[in-house]
Length: 199
Length: 171
Image 1 (spheres, one colour):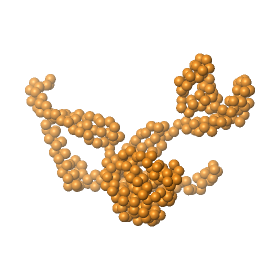
Image 2: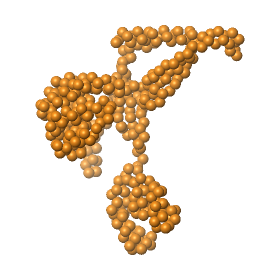
Image 3: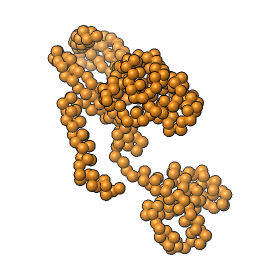
């Protein structure tokens, strides 16, 4: 059977298996655990002790606690990834056997944080390198060893590029004469207007 | 000394612990180092070979009986752990860690407007002996489909009779 929150594919077996573990926790506590898992997905620190306290009533072993966090993380991130609205998510989770209150609590937490999750995933998507900043300077060359009177303007550009790992910033210096710079600017303006037609 | 040898196996040499032991026993630190290394060698060699004739082989070394018995005990107690540590020391090829991917469409370039050129960009994260490397690859959808087909064929080999026979025999 195909599920939208799994990207129109079958639900993974391990998720099916852990739904019964989720049902052991009370629905109120499940909503609080969801909030913690959402924090982790959004890049903030997860408070594992709080989760341990919340699951201690259901008498879950440590392996089950980790499985709970994993399955909630999968459900929430997968639903955000495939842009599933919270009612569809709720009905699909109930089809998998999650009790109604649990499903609705989970989906309410999901609904609040759906846009921030999607924004975060968009920011984390694969990127090659990224332009950090551009610095420029215009000089006027008066004279050089080749020719006594040069009298030409010159543009110095420094592109600060962050590599694909996101760690190092490399500076790429470029020097252009006025004509070359005009060509570069014209081409970039054309590309920019093409981008605007798509937005 | 036996304890020091095990710690060395687990984490590499610990010079400070050796110093403490040397001071307690009033022997030079070099002797202790050599003693520990010798014990490590003895333990790893015997674990490697699962020596059941262990007792007879160390008899050759001419230690006292008591020493032999304690060495044997040390060996038997920690054999499993030593074997698992030795198992992890094999050189490894880079192994899969994760794959990031992205689907782009090129619409225009400086030379040609009004194009439609889809491309899949992938970043393959690999693990090799705790080093993480990343490889960036780019392909068009047709090549990607071919790649998927080849990989599925490779997985399908596992279900063929030849593979099944070998797997059954290994178990």
